[in-house]
Amino acid sequence: MAYAGTIMADRPDLENFVRVRRVGRGWSQDELARRSGLSRAGVSAIENGRLVPSTSASLALAAAFGCRVEDLFRLPGTKSADLAWAWAPVRTPCRYWSAAFREGVRLFPVEASPLGLVPHDGVYEAGSPLGHAGAEPERTLVLACCDPAVGLLAGALAQAAGVRLVVLPRSSRSALALLRQGLVHAAGVHLSPAGQPGGNLEAVKDDLGAGYALLRAAEWEEGITFSPARAMSTVRAAVHSELRWVGRERGSAARECLDELLGGRTLRRVASDHRGVAEAVRSGWADAGVCLRLVSEEAGLDFLPVRREVYDICLPDSWKGDDRLRALVSAVRSPAYRRVLGELPGYDSAATGEFEHVVLAGAP
Image (spheres, rainbow, N blue to C red):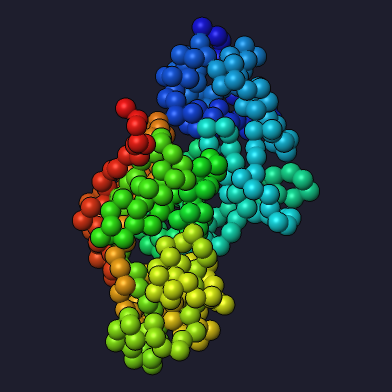
Protein backbone atom coordinates (compact mmCIF):
# COMPACT_ATOMS: atom_id res chain seq x y z
CA MET A 1 0.00 0.00 0.00
CA ALA A 2 1.42 3.39 -0.99
CA TYR A 3 2.39 5.85 1.74
CA ALA A 4 -0.24 8.63 1.77
CA GLY A 5 1.75 11.67 2.85
CA THR A 6 2.55 13.99 5.72
CA ILE A 7 0.31 16.03 7.99
CA MET A 8 -0.20 19.60 6.77
CA ALA A 9 2.18 22.10 8.34
CA ASP A 10 3.55 25.45 7.16
CA ARG A 11 3.35 25.18 3.39
CA PRO A 12 1.85 26.90 0.32
CA ASP A 13 -1.83 25.95 -0.01
CA LEU A 14 -2.41 23.28 -2.63
CA GLU A 15 -5.46 23.37 -4.87
CA ASN A 16 -6.70 19.79 -4.77
CA PHE A 17 -8.90 18.18 -7.47
CA VAL A 18 -8.90 14.59 -6.21
CA ARG A 19 -12.47 14.71 -4.94
CA VAL A 20 -13.63 16.48 -8.09
CA ARG A 21 -12.27 13.69 -10.26
CA ARG A 22 -13.54 10.95 -7.95
CA VAL A 23 -17.09 12.30 -7.86
CA GLY A 24 -16.97 12.92 -11.60
CA ARG A 25 -16.18 9.23 -12.10
CA GLY A 26 -18.93 8.18 -9.70
CA TRP A 27 -16.40 6.43 -7.41
CA SER A 28 -16.61 6.11 -3.65
CA GLN A 29 -13.55 6.76 -1.51
CA ASP A 30 -13.29 2.99 -1.02
CA GLU A 31 -13.21 2.49 -4.79
CA LEU A 32 -10.48 5.10 -5.26
CA ALA A 33 -8.49 3.54 -2.40
CA ARG A 34 -8.72 0.13 -4.08
CA ARG A 35 -7.65 1.48 -7.48
CA SER A 36 -4.74 3.55 -6.11
CA GLY A 37 -3.47 1.22 -3.42
CA LEU A 38 -3.95 3.87 -0.70
CA SER A 39 -6.00 3.45 2.44
CA ARG A 40 -9.50 4.92 2.55
CA ALA A 41 -8.38 7.09 5.48
CA GLY A 42 -5.47 8.35 3.39
CA VAL A 43 -7.75 9.21 0.47
CA SER A 44 -10.12 11.06 2.80
CA ALA A 45 -7.30 13.01 4.44
CA ILE A 46 -5.82 14.03 1.07
CA GLU A 47 -9.23 15.11 -0.27
CA ASN A 48 -9.95 17.16 2.86
CA GLY A 49 -6.53 18.82 2.83
CA ARG A 50 -5.30 17.25 6.07
CA LEU A 51 -2.38 15.50 4.35
CA VAL A 52 0.17 16.63 1.79
CA PRO A 53 0.34 13.65 -0.56
CA SER A 54 3.67 11.93 -0.91
CA THR A 55 5.26 11.52 -4.32
CA SER A 56 4.26 7.86 -4.44
CA ALA A 57 0.68 8.65 -3.37
CA SER A 58 0.39 11.43 -5.98
CA LEU A 59 1.64 9.11 -8.72
CA ALA A 60 -0.70 6.33 -7.55
CA LEU A 61 -3.73 8.65 -7.63
CA ALA A 62 -2.78 9.99 -11.07
CA ALA A 63 -2.43 6.42 -12.36
CA ALA A 64 -5.84 5.49 -10.96
CA PHE A 65 -7.45 8.40 -12.81
CA GLY A 66 -5.32 8.09 -15.92
CA CYS A 67 -4.19 11.72 -15.67
CA ARG A 68 -1.12 13.75 -14.72
CA VAL A 69 -0.18 14.65 -11.15
CA GLU A 70 -0.52 18.34 -12.03
CA ASP A 71 -4.14 17.66 -13.00
CA LEU A 72 -4.80 16.66 -9.38
CA PHE A 73 -2.68 19.16 -7.44
CA ARG A 74 -1.49 22.66 -8.23
CA LEU A 75 -0.24 25.79 -6.52
CA PRO A 76 -2.63 28.77 -6.35
CA GLY A 77 -2.47 30.94 -9.45
CA THR A 78 -1.22 28.21 -11.76
CA LYS A 79 -3.32 26.88 -14.61
CA SER A 80 -4.47 23.30 -14.94
CA ALA A 81 -5.13 21.49 -18.18
CA ASP A 82 -8.02 19.82 -16.33
CA LEU A 83 -10.03 23.05 -16.37
CA ALA A 84 -11.93 23.51 -19.61
CA TRP A 85 -14.62 25.90 -20.78
CA ALA A 86 -17.98 24.37 -21.65
CA TRP A 87 -17.96 27.10 -24.32
CA ALA A 88 -15.73 30.12 -24.73
CA PRO A 89 -16.73 33.36 -22.98
CA VAL A 90 -17.72 36.16 -25.33
CA ARG A 91 -15.83 38.79 -23.34
CA THR A 92 -13.29 39.15 -20.55
CA PRO A 93 -13.17 39.62 -17.64
CA CYS A 94 -15.82 36.94 -17.28
CA ARG A 95 -17.48 35.52 -14.17
CA TYR A 96 -17.89 31.76 -14.27
CA TRP A 97 -19.49 28.79 -12.53
CA SER A 98 -17.56 25.54 -12.17
CA ALA A 99 -18.87 21.98 -12.11
CA ALA A 100 -17.23 18.56 -12.00
CA PHE A 101 -17.79 16.12 -14.85
CA ARG A 102 -16.28 12.73 -15.56
CA GLU A 103 -13.52 14.33 -17.64
CA GLY A 104 -12.73 17.01 -15.06
CA VAL A 105 -13.93 20.48 -14.11
CA ARG A 106 -15.81 22.60 -16.66
CA LEU A 107 -16.23 26.35 -16.47
CA PHE A 108 -19.49 27.98 -17.54
CA PRO A 109 -19.67 31.70 -18.35
CA VAL A 110 -22.26 33.25 -16.04
CA GLU A 111 -25.54 34.01 -17.81
CA ALA A 112 -29.04 35.09 -16.85
CA SER A 113 -30.65 32.34 -14.81
CA PRO A 114 -34.23 31.57 -13.75
CA LEU A 115 -32.74 31.25 -10.26
CA GLY A 116 -31.72 34.91 -10.21
CA LEU A 117 -28.15 35.95 -9.44
CA VAL A 118 -26.36 32.68 -8.63
CA PRO A 119 -22.99 33.36 -6.91
CA HIS A 120 -20.08 32.78 -9.27
CA ASP A 121 -17.02 30.64 -8.52
CA GLY A 122 -14.36 32.89 -9.97
CA VAL A 123 -13.36 35.42 -12.59
CA TYR A 124 -11.52 34.69 -15.84
CA GLU A 125 -9.11 37.50 -16.58
CA ALA A 126 -5.79 37.90 -18.40
CA GLY A 127 -6.00 34.38 -19.78
CA SER A 128 -6.41 32.64 -16.43
CA PRO A 129 -9.35 31.55 -14.25
CA LEU A 130 -8.99 32.96 -10.73
CA GLY A 131 -11.15 30.79 -8.50
CA HIS A 132 -12.75 31.76 -5.23
CA ALA A 133 -12.01 29.91 -2.02
CA GLY A 134 -14.88 27.62 -1.08
CA ALA A 135 -16.02 26.85 -4.63
CA GLU A 136 -17.25 23.24 -4.77
CA PRO A 137 -17.54 22.03 -8.37
CA GLU A 138 -18.04 18.46 -7.12
CA ARG A 139 -21.22 19.65 -5.33
CA THR A 140 -22.59 21.48 -8.39
CA LEU A 141 -25.14 20.01 -10.80
CA VAL A 142 -25.83 21.64 -14.17
CA LEU A 143 -29.35 21.36 -15.61
CA ALA A 144 -30.49 22.82 -18.95
CA CYS A 145 -34.24 23.40 -19.04
CA CYS A 146 -37.01 25.98 -19.42
CA ASP A 147 -39.06 25.12 -16.33
CA PRO A 148 -40.01 28.47 -14.71
CA ALA A 149 -40.54 26.66 -11.39
CA VAL A 150 -37.03 25.15 -11.30
CA GLY A 151 -36.19 27.33 -8.31
CA LEU A 152 -38.30 25.01 -6.16
CA LEU A 153 -36.13 22.08 -7.24
CA ALA A 154 -32.94 24.05 -6.59
CA GLY A 155 -34.14 24.82 -3.07
CA ALA A 156 -35.11 21.21 -2.35
CA LEU A 157 -31.78 19.93 -3.67
CA ALA A 158 -29.72 22.38 -1.63
CA GLN A 159 -31.68 21.74 1.55
CA ALA A 160 -31.71 17.95 1.35
CA ALA A 161 -28.25 17.23 -0.04
CA GLY A 162 -26.20 20.43 -0.07
CA VAL A 163 -26.00 20.30 -3.88
CA ARG A 164 -25.99 23.57 -5.81
CA LEU A 165 -28.08 23.60 -8.98
CA VAL A 166 -26.86 25.75 -11.87
CA VAL A 167 -29.69 26.17 -14.40
CA LEU A 168 -29.04 27.07 -18.02
CA PRO A 169 -32.27 28.33 -19.64
CA ARG A 170 -32.63 26.32 -22.85
CA SER A 171 -35.40 24.93 -25.03
CA SER A 172 -36.00 21.18 -25.02
CA ARG A 173 -33.97 20.48 -28.17
CA SER A 174 -31.13 22.77 -27.11
CA ALA A 175 -31.02 21.11 -23.69
CA LEU A 176 -30.80 17.65 -25.26
CA ALA A 177 -28.01 18.85 -27.54
CA LEU A 178 -25.97 19.97 -24.52
CA LEU A 179 -26.55 16.63 -22.80
CA ARG A 180 -25.44 14.78 -25.93
CA GLN A 181 -22.19 16.76 -25.90
CA GLY A 182 -21.64 16.00 -22.21
CA LEU A 183 -21.83 19.70 -21.29
CA VAL A 184 -24.65 19.35 -18.73
CA HIS A 185 -25.58 16.65 -16.24
CA ALA A 186 -29.30 16.62 -17.09
CA ALA A 187 -31.76 18.14 -19.57
CA GLY A 188 -35.40 19.17 -19.27
CA VAL A 189 -37.69 18.19 -22.16
CA HIS A 190 -41.39 18.80 -22.79
CA LEU A 191 -42.19 17.80 -26.36
CA SER A 192 -45.00 15.42 -25.44
CA PRO A 193 -48.66 16.50 -25.16
CA ALA A 194 -50.29 14.67 -22.24
CA GLY A 195 -52.78 13.04 -24.61
CA GLN A 196 -49.99 11.71 -26.84
CA PRO A 197 -47.59 9.87 -24.52
CA GLY A 198 -44.14 9.01 -25.77
CA GLY A 199 -43.16 12.29 -27.42
CA ASN A 200 -40.35 13.00 -24.99
CA LEU A 201 -39.09 9.45 -25.29
CA GLU A 202 -39.04 9.66 -29.08
CA ALA A 203 -37.19 12.98 -28.95
CA VAL A 204 -34.51 11.45 -26.71
CA LYS A 205 -34.23 8.41 -29.00
CA ASP A 206 -33.82 10.66 -32.04
CA ASP A 207 -31.39 13.12 -30.45
CA LEU A 208 -29.40 10.94 -28.02
CA GLY A 209 -30.08 7.25 -28.64
CA ALA A 210 -29.98 4.66 -25.87
CA GLY A 211 -28.34 5.05 -22.48
CA TYR A 212 -30.75 7.58 -20.98
CA ALA A 213 -33.77 7.64 -18.70
CA LEU A 214 -36.64 10.10 -18.29
CA LEU A 215 -37.61 11.22 -14.80
CA ARG A 216 -41.15 12.62 -14.73
CA ALA A 217 -41.05 16.14 -13.33
CA ALA A 218 -44.62 17.33 -13.91
CA GLU A 219 -47.52 17.83 -16.27
CA TRP A 220 -48.38 21.44 -17.00
CA GLU A 221 -50.76 23.63 -18.99
CA GLU A 222 -49.48 25.51 -22.02
CA GLY A 223 -51.64 28.01 -23.83
CA ILE A 224 -52.18 31.55 -25.07
CA THR A 225 -51.34 34.47 -22.81
CA PHE A 226 -52.85 37.89 -23.58
CA SER A 227 -53.83 41.17 -21.96
CA PRO A 228 -57.18 41.23 -20.10
CA ALA A 229 -58.10 44.24 -22.25
CA ARG A 230 -58.34 41.90 -25.25
CA ALA A 231 -61.28 40.03 -23.68
CA MET A 232 -60.94 36.88 -25.82
CA SER A 233 -62.90 33.83 -24.71
CA THR A 234 -61.77 31.07 -27.08
CA VAL A 235 -58.58 29.86 -28.75
CA ARG A 236 -60.32 30.12 -32.11
CA ALA A 237 -61.09 33.79 -31.50
CA ALA A 238 -57.47 34.46 -30.61
CA VAL A 239 -56.09 32.68 -33.67
CA HIS A 240 -58.39 34.56 -36.04
CA SER A 241 -57.83 37.98 -34.48
CA GLU A 242 -55.38 40.55 -35.80
CA LEU A 243 -52.78 40.15 -33.09
CA ARG A 244 -49.07 40.76 -32.81
CA TRP A 245 -47.74 37.38 -31.72
CA VAL A 246 -44.52 36.75 -29.84
CA GLY A 247 -42.99 33.28 -30.30
CA ARG A 248 -40.14 31.17 -29.04
CA GLU A 249 -37.12 29.81 -30.89
CA ARG A 250 -37.48 26.70 -33.02
CA GLY A 251 -36.85 23.54 -31.03
CA SER A 252 -39.04 24.69 -28.15
CA ALA A 253 -42.41 23.11 -27.37
CA ALA A 254 -44.02 26.55 -27.13
CA ARG A 255 -42.93 27.31 -30.70
CA GLU A 256 -44.30 23.96 -31.91
CA CYS A 257 -47.62 24.72 -30.22
CA LEU A 258 -47.81 28.22 -31.71
CA ASP A 259 -46.89 26.96 -35.20
CA GLU A 260 -49.75 24.47 -34.98
CA LEU A 261 -52.15 27.25 -34.02
CA LEU A 262 -50.97 29.75 -36.66
CA GLY A 263 -50.11 27.33 -39.43
CA GLY A 264 -46.43 28.20 -39.41
CA ARG A 265 -47.03 31.92 -39.85
CA THR A 266 -43.83 34.01 -39.87
CA LEU A 267 -43.11 35.57 -36.48
CA ARG A 268 -41.31 38.88 -36.11
CA ARG A 269 -41.03 38.78 -32.32
CA VAL A 270 -39.21 35.99 -30.49
CA ALA A 271 -38.64 35.60 -26.73
CA SER A 272 -36.01 33.41 -25.09
CA ASP A 273 -38.22 31.70 -22.51
CA HIS A 274 -41.72 31.44 -21.05
CA ARG A 275 -41.34 34.50 -18.84
CA GLY A 276 -39.98 36.45 -21.81
CA VAL A 277 -43.21 35.72 -23.71
CA ALA A 278 -45.35 36.91 -20.81
CA GLU A 279 -43.22 40.02 -20.30
CA ALA A 280 -43.47 40.92 -24.00
CA VAL A 281 -47.26 40.82 -23.74
CA ARG A 282 -47.41 42.57 -20.37
CA SER A 283 -45.21 45.44 -21.61
CA GLY A 284 -47.24 45.88 -24.82
CA TRP A 285 -44.46 44.73 -27.16
CA ALA A 286 -46.79 41.96 -28.34
CA ASP A 287 -50.49 41.16 -28.00
CA ALA A 288 -50.33 37.40 -27.43
CA GLY A 289 -48.01 34.43 -27.23
CA VAL A 290 -47.76 30.84 -26.03
CA CYS A 291 -46.37 30.09 -22.57
CA LEU A 292 -47.21 28.20 -19.39
CA ARG A 293 -50.21 29.12 -17.24
CA LEU A 294 -47.88 29.74 -14.29
CA VAL A 295 -45.97 32.61 -15.88
CA SER A 296 -49.12 34.07 -17.45
CA GLU A 297 -50.77 34.34 -14.04
CA GLU A 298 -47.57 35.67 -12.48
CA ALA A 299 -47.64 38.51 -15.04
CA GLY A 300 -51.32 39.29 -14.36
CA LEU A 301 -52.40 38.26 -17.85
CA ASP A 302 -55.36 36.23 -19.10
CA PHE A 303 -54.82 32.68 -20.30
CA LEU A 304 -56.52 30.28 -22.72
CA PRO A 305 -55.36 26.67 -22.27
CA VAL A 306 -54.35 24.86 -25.47
CA ARG A 307 -52.82 21.60 -24.28
CA ARG A 308 -51.32 19.77 -21.32
CA GLU A 309 -47.71 18.67 -21.68
CA VAL A 310 -45.49 16.12 -20.01
CA TYR A 311 -42.27 17.62 -18.65
CA ASP A 312 -39.42 15.16 -18.00
CA ILE A 313 -35.81 15.45 -16.87
CA CYS A 314 -33.47 13.38 -19.04
CA LEU A 315 -30.62 11.67 -17.18
CA PRO A 316 -27.83 9.36 -18.31
CA ASP A 317 -28.39 5.74 -17.26
CA SER A 318 -25.27 6.07 -15.11
CA TRP A 319 -27.07 8.51 -12.78
CA LYS A 320 -26.86 6.09 -9.84
CA GLY A 321 -23.07 6.47 -9.89
CA ASP A 322 -23.23 10.22 -9.27
CA ASP A 323 -24.15 11.47 -5.80
CA ARG A 324 -25.57 14.69 -7.24
CA LEU A 325 -27.90 12.97 -9.70
CA ARG A 326 -29.06 10.55 -7.02
CA ALA A 327 -29.84 13.57 -4.84
CA LEU A 328 -31.74 15.15 -7.75
CA VAL A 329 -33.92 12.06 -8.15
CA SER A 330 -34.58 11.94 -4.40
CA ALA A 331 -35.51 15.63 -4.35
CA VAL A 332 -37.96 15.24 -7.25
CA ARG A 333 -39.56 12.24 -5.52
CA SER A 334 -39.78 13.88 -2.10
CA PRO A 335 -43.34 14.45 -0.78
CA ALA A 336 -42.58 18.08 0.16
CA TYR A 337 -41.39 18.98 -3.35
CA ARG A 338 -44.27 17.17 -5.04
CA ARG A 339 -46.77 18.92 -2.81
CA VAL A 340 -45.52 22.46 -3.43
CA LEU A 341 -45.10 21.77 -7.16
CA GLY A 342 -48.69 20.52 -7.44
CA GLU A 343 -49.95 23.72 -5.84
CA LEU A 344 -48.63 25.87 -8.71
CA PRO A 345 -51.13 27.13 -11.31
CA GLY A 346 -51.30 24.67 -14.21
CA TYR A 347 -48.93 22.08 -12.64
CA ASP A 348 -49.86 18.48 -11.86
CA SER A 349 -47.44 16.39 -9.77
CA ALA A 350 -49.48 13.17 -9.59
CA ALA A 351 -46.90 11.22 -11.66
CA THR A 352 -43.83 13.19 -10.54
CA GLY A 353 -40.87 10.89 -9.85
CA GLU A 354 -41.78 8.07 -12.25
CA PHE A 355 -39.06 6.69 -14.53
CA GLU A 356 -39.09 5.70 -18.20
CA HIS A 357 -36.01 4.18 -19.85
CA VAL A 358 -34.97 4.67 -23.46
CA VAL A 359 -34.91 1.35 -25.33
CA LEU A 360 -34.13 1.31 -29.05
CA ALA A 361 -36.02 -0.96 -31.42
CA GLY A 362 -34.30 -4.32 -31.74
CA ALA A 363 -32.36 -3.91 -28.49
CA PRO A 364 -32.43 -6.90 -26.09
